[in-house]
Structures are given as structure tokens and as C-alpha cells.
Image (tube, rainbow, N blue to C red):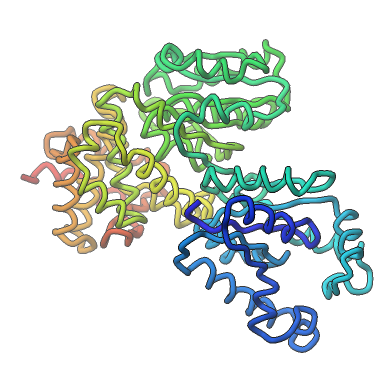
Length: 528
């Protein structure tokens, strides 16, 4: 519990009572944000509203919350927020990154009843309390949905609520803010048996999608965790070469024959190929059912399972058919990585390096310092690199769910990398190895075009080599790769958004004509 706990939600949902109980249970300080604002202003909230209006109150509220989130705490506090504290999305995304946000919920009539019984003056309910409450709840619907967890408080004791909220805080989940499709990512050890059934919930049917290799290693544990719902199991052949629409059809048919309806859940239990296929099957079966991602490889944990990009390959066009379909939850049990092949684990470190370059310079420093240890496989820093990588991706996806702008930065190294992967028939190179080569290509092209300092390109190339990843891009079939660049999904007409790096944590896109990029790619053959 290194981050503060923020209790959000409508007025009279129990934020203060539950917050005090959680703080007492865990021995943490408690802060009521409205009380803190009143103390700073020397006036009650009602007086601030009456004297200066809501806009002035919100400015004081933003300042007080920023102070909480930007302060280094010896013991992270529990904070009860006012009902409108996270309505502004910029403020909400900052809070989701810096804290664990739990939304407390109750029916609107119950909130109005509690508000009346409290005797407190509620300026926002003046006139028609029930009507105003309904309007406010509708206006704030997304603000309350974008959180780490939602907890109903009506008909439950403070003791039970404080226990549940404390457990959420202790799990320290990461949030992907996607409106009412928001979800949390849980990262830790031995989570499969402890948490999978809870995340699936009361679904009448569950379709467990995996591959034959993962099922042979971990299938018993997964089916045991899901035993109460007797899952329909679909074990696909492993490998990128099997990531096609035929695999999705196999899932559709199994779900239909097993009686799965719109209330069903799909569980994607495997590497990135499996989670991409399972997510796409969920997006399209019965016009969309919920799914849970349970990645079993490092690559899937730090990349494929988070963000809602689902799909399959179409011939040599990687992920050419798919949909944005966010999971309802993601569970990253790092114990599952103990059975991953050394090559697979090592390959995924290319995505970690990419992510660090995009948004976490400290992660880049950590990977450099621990490169020899990380290259050997799972170790003491594994959970941290997974957590930090997902935090960067969650932050970007929350700001740009459908890749309208910022999210395109996650494609650093992927343009040439995907082309080389396709040239290799999705078998000679792993995805991570292709990304390693793609990073080298992107950085060298960035140097040639004046974006990237040569020292950064050299630093990253040395790091990738130290991790045991391929860096000799000149030895690759660059002429063939150049011809495949037009298949890239970031292409718009005869131009393409290419991601370049200026410094760790400072990356951007630049528009290149396809023929220019093809020429730059061919020129890599002359590199030493």
C-alpha cells in the first residue's frame, strides 16, 4: 500500500465512515478532503459555495487533492473525497496513476435519504433533492466508473465494507480508464487460485481459451480455480502461425455448443497470441461478451493483455483483423512465468525496454543495472518490471483508448519489427526479437533524420545486446521488409506515422512517406 487510497462516489455513500474504518484497520492516517478544504479556507463547504460559488470550491479542491497526491508520505493515507472531486478527467487520470481509487455506490434514493438524515447542508441538492441527485449522478457516471474498483454500500455493515476496501487497497491494482468499460490489472504471486474465480464472478458459462502448451503446464490449476462453473475449454495449437480467423471460429463453435449466451465470460489464459484471439472471440461472439485476461508469458503481461487491442493476422499482415474490446479484468500471476522458456522471457524484455523508453526512464535504468540477472529469467525484479511496464501502458491507454494520438507511441520499434517478423514467417523470430531489431531500426532512422541523439541509439543497442536480444538489423532481409511496410495499420494513404525517440521518456510520431521509410529501411543494410 505505497499509494494513497481515495474513496470516491456520490454524497452519502459512506466515504467518510468507511474511510475512517479502513484507516483504523490498517493503522493509516485518514483525511476528509472537504474538511481539509474547510480548514484551509476558514469556512465550511456550504459557506464557500454561498460566498464564492462552485468554481471557486473546485479550484480549492483540486489544489488540496494535488497536495495529497504529490506529497511523499511515510504512510500512505486514506482520503474521503467530495462527490465531484474527480469529475475533471485530467484530475481523475492523475489520481488513478498516483493512488488506488475505490468508488462507493448506493441507490440514488438511499443517498438522498442518508443526506437528509445527516443534517449536513448540501448546496448541490438545494430545491429538489431527488431530482438534483439523479441529474448529478448521471453527469458523474463516467467519473465514478473510472476507478480501480466499485463497491456497493447499501445494506452492508461498515465492518464488512472496510474489510473489502482494505483488501482492494492491499492488492495495489493498476487501473485502465475506459469509461464504463474501465478495469483493473492485478499483479502479484499465486493469484490464479486466489483471484480468478472472483474476477469471473457469477457468469453462467465460462469459456477458457488457452493453447496446448499452457494447458499442459497450468491447465489443472486454471480448471480447478474455475471448477464451480465447469468451464468450456478450448486449447489451441501454440504459435503466431495459428493466429488466424480459424482459431476464432473454433472458439465461437465451442461456446455455442456449450450453451454460452451473452452473460458468458471468456478467459484468455496464455501468451499474447492467446489473449489476442480470446479477446477478439469475446468481442464478436453474441455481438460482444465480457472477457478476463490471464497472461502466462512476460510479453503478454507487459504488452498484449492490457489495452483492449484484440485480433488475428491476415496472411503477412499482423493483427490486420480485430477490434478494440477491453477486458473486464486482467490477472498477472508472475509465478506462471517460472515455466516460460528462457528465449520467450528474454524476448519479452525488448517490450520492457520499449516501454521504459516511452514513459519510465527509471525503469530503463533498472533494466540496465540488472541486465545480466534479467536475461537469466524470473527473479526478484520481475514483479516490479511487470508493474512498471503496465503502469506506463495503462496511463497511455487511459488517455487514448483507440489510438487517436498518444497511444501510437506504444508502436515504437514495431513498424520495421512487424515487417521483419512477417518476413520470418512468424517462426524464425519471436515477437520480442523482432521488436528488438525494430527498436534498433527506429533509433537509427531517428538518428539519420535528426530526432534521436546517437548516444541514445548506442545506449539502447548495448542494452538489448546485454539482454541477449538480436541487434544486427543489417543481417535481416530488409528489402523484403521494406515491401511489407504498406501493411502497417498506422498507414494513412501513402504516409505512415513513425515513432521516434528524442530521450528516455520523450518520444513522438513523425509522418513519413512510405517510399521514404522504405528507403530508410533498405539503408539499414549498410550499418556496421
